[in-house]
Image (cartoon, rainbow, N blue to C red; front, side, top):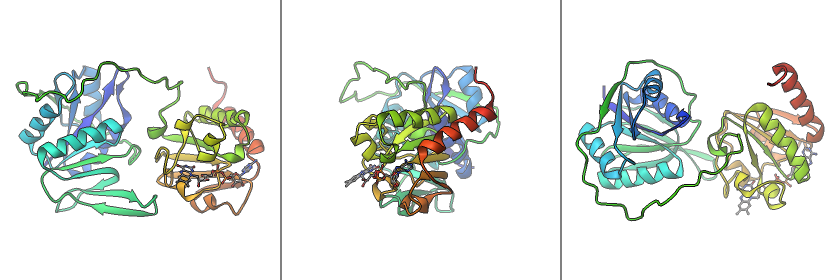
Length: 315
Ligand code: FAD
């Protein structure tokens, strides 16, 4: 069975969820092998094994593109899967150039075919799906968060440190410091499994706090339409849509959002869409799996109360 390399990100809290999703996808294409930059401690290796990584390759230091390219050349995998974060896309682009291979970015699904992996992309503001296949060299594919639900398939992984250090041609730019942005205890919008989004219909910044309370009750991130951010109800980085973030959570709950094409472009890949809007003709209902026609100022507090009641007292 051919190997499928998965570049996995990890931090102090363990393996990032996106990596577990990639391993789950990789199992459709061949035998997954994880690539970890830096040391992989026992807990990281155990997690990767639980999600089917037969091999864990560790790349020294910060994982230079040269080292990753050398690893890919030595293994000749059927595909390299990388998360579609800004950093992941940069790594993927540099890898593909060095390998002289084809690159597909922002896949929302990947399946196997006799000719090689087929990646599905959501295109034209999410109105169409395109299926593509790399025709030259190793398929390098970046995959958006939440493309699949991570599923366990335990194996006992082999840990293989990268061979002798690869000479690096040196960075064109040097990273001098990093300042992690405070997430405020909520998951990052781009890869949160639950997103609660508010629009102009929320009515005010104070009203937006209600949507934040619902997001917190569901353990989700907060999103917004451009109208809501332009009106100053919430920060601009919460904007979802064509000129904001693209999200594809398991659950997207939209309150007071009409469903303009530019907003839909950023969220219509969501698995389950719940809409609260007082106008039954609002276009966003066309996307809804569940829709509630009514005033969000009545419905959202009732929803929060019901979640709290079912969950019991929070510690
Ligand atoms: P509205 O369209 O005004 O809708 C408000 C909705 O709230 C209505 O449906 C109303 O029925 C409902 N409502 C009102 N009160 C209540 C209540 N009490 N309870 C329940 N429902 C209520 N938009 C984005 O979102 N993201 C983008 O990335 C983006 N990019 C753009 C790029 C370009 C080039 C352009 C031209 C536009 C872009 N827009 C974007 C703007 C977009 O066209 C819409 O204007 C915007 O999405 C509308 O936001 P909204 O749905 O919150 O507001």
